Structure formats: structure tokens, C-alpha cells
Image (cartoon, rainbow, N blue to C red; front, side, top):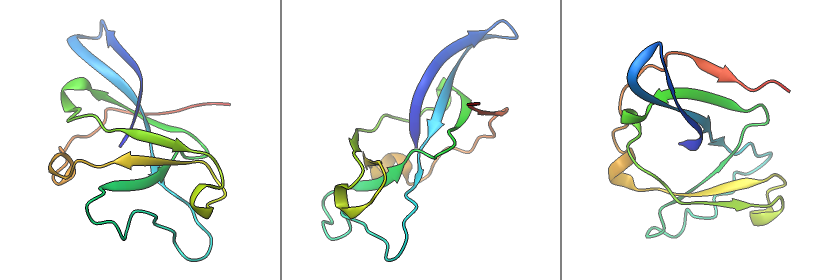
Length: 110
């Protein structure tokens, strides 16, 4: 799960459109793990974060299987001292993710 940063084409691979996707990761927590959505079985949300060092992948847009709603939470929400992202999960879309091998990974440089 991630956020599309750029959509582009390249002359090297004609008739193909790509997306650069910034990945979301599990929240790093010290002590007991906080999951504010665990006790509400009908609310299909997952708590994620953007990694400190951004990690992106480039995929063909035909491998994008859907869109999700996200809500950015400032540091301190849910008692977690870092910014988090609440992601609405559509179970039928993520139960069997497509298998693909990204052609390469990109890392953002500071």
C-alpha cells in the first residue's frame, strides 16, 4: 500500500504507463503495540506510517488494483509520538495481492 507520486511514460518501453509509488510501512512503536481499530471489527482500517527514509517502487499502472482512502494523523494521535496514516482497507482487493517483480526500486536522496 502506498501513495502514487508520479505517473509517467518512457520511450524505452512504448505504450506503457508507470507509477512511482511511495510505500507505507508498519508504525514503529516502543512498548505495547497500539492498534486503535482492533476492537471495531466492522471498521476495516489499518494504521501505517511513511518511512523515515522514503522508499518508492515503480510499477506498471496495470498492476494497480484499486484505491484506498487515507487519513493523515499528526504526532500524538492514538498516543503514538509520530505521524501516522489511517488506511481504509478493502479486503477483497488485498486478500490476494498481484504477484509482480518491480523492475527497480528508487530511493529519495536528501
